[in-house]
Length: 298
Image 1 (tube, helix red, strand yellow):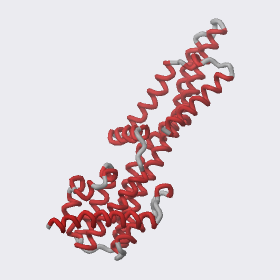
Image 2 (image 1 turned 90 degrees about the vertical axis):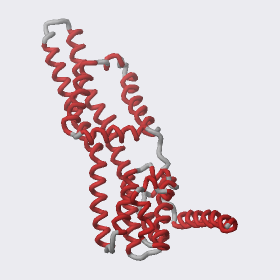
Image 3 (image 1 turned 45 degrees about the vertical axis):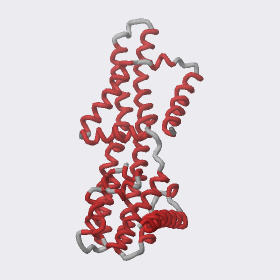
């Protein structure tokens, strides 16, 4: 919704100001200029990027205009899942996780946290690295360095769509000039005609420059920035996993290990330590209440 509001403000500011200056919106309707600029922009994206990046770009753009994710609730579920897993390790050892990390999307433990489960990158990152830890002794510093390299690789892949949009956005003013030059070439053919006709062709050529600049600074660059910010927020969860697993290897209790991950989260979704502790106490109380009737029935 915020993105749509922003685009409406951009359109209202640019074209509303033009109308206030006694301009006519019909002057901007130049299909040929649009074909040149948008066609060149789309073609350059296709030439300069792989199919994977193009598909990921469409997916991420769709996510921008989709329903807003409840990040605070996802963060709560993420922290609770990590505490659940670490508490299971504390009580029964790493081998207890085998059936859950091998097929995390089928695991009843992971299924308790649907917002986390809906993020395959995060789920696979958690499962793969817990599987790695269960295979033998690991040094906290070595694991931290390994996870940092993996996070950098994931972030680089996730940022490719925003970089592709950024490069295309930077090229749009150039494509606008290209369309304008084409319009001037056409105008030169009418130099012996009426001034009104020459004026119309010059205006059409200038619209090409306008469209290129507008799409650069009003559409593509803001979209690329929004994608970059969304990736950064997503990567903060991976950084939290790294901090939690490193703290676990250093021998910290599950609550303190999860708190290490909490500390690296974005400020607007980071709960306080007291809130985290209350979540865990409530979850432990629910589990105790569930087990008590089972004992009575037995």
